[in-house]
Image (cartoon, rainbow, N blue to C red; front, side, top):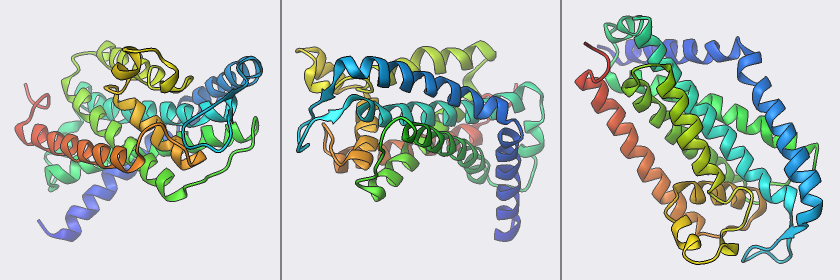
Length: 263
């Protein structure tokens, strides 16, 4: 297979999956818009006035609570949508048997996987950007470290789109997709330092929180927005990048094996 035909197949599949969610804005963008308006209104404005400000190591002064929670909400929206899009695309293709058309195309397995992941990550980045824009209507939002923000946003979106492919291959029914997103992904984010500073937790909960990978994602994006973090952003980015590469390799291996794709 030539490079040109392989890239054409990749672009066609990625375009199809991106257009699928762009053509349904009421399903793609309206729910996170409404949900995050409520988050910012309740947690940021109403409770934020009671909480006041949050102190983080390295910050020259305390951070307003509504600004503190914004990066975590961006992460929650980005990874949930990246995961949902990739898992739905793969599972829906299996459920309705049209994924067989992709498998019989002259595309390598790596390009098939890349197309699903790129589409999922694109949705995650779009929703994350939407949430940041919503937050700008409630508080003054700056970007202290734009390169770090872009890097962490890209890595976490790619990572959870990659996880979505695994779950899309593993799931036996629609309930499995809902279970993974609602009962595993979201709780890990909420306990990942979105609404509180990790250092404020008593021992051993502070130490246990450091085992949660969401802590590093939330703090990485927070470093991009605010320039402060409770963990080393360079270490976090390196670990998350390695994990993303590992899950990508797993996706390709599962496709080559035909896991979940054939009876």
